[in-house]
Length: 145
Image (cartoon, rainbow, N blue to C red):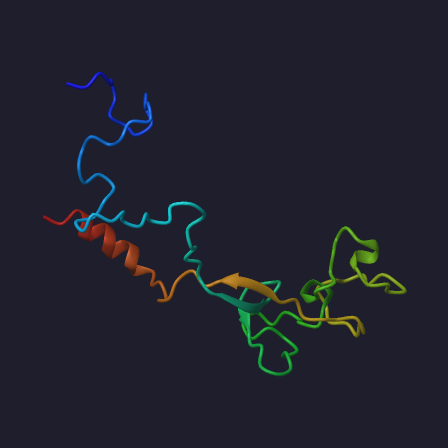
């Protein structure tokens, strides 16, 4: 038996050669290449997409050409402060642009010249649409006999 308590490499090493044959070598006698264990792993991130959503109901708005005047689902005015990129409740007049006067109703249509549709980047989290009955089916399949 060895005088070493543990067999890990590095524990009480005295610079001795490896006594076990074949450790760290391939069948041909050459040292085998080590796997790249240093550094971060490659991330498997989902894809990204740019979308514009209605500020009232959250439905995805079509981004083809000109934006419609109202939301196709709830009828919310899309050329309004709440739908604008520059809307900021903490800024002066609640806008990051130098507007001359405050617009009172942020949810109604206006003729602001600084208006730009708010676009956000979202992750594509699922490839298949989730149906409402999928969870129920999974639960029922769990307790089938």
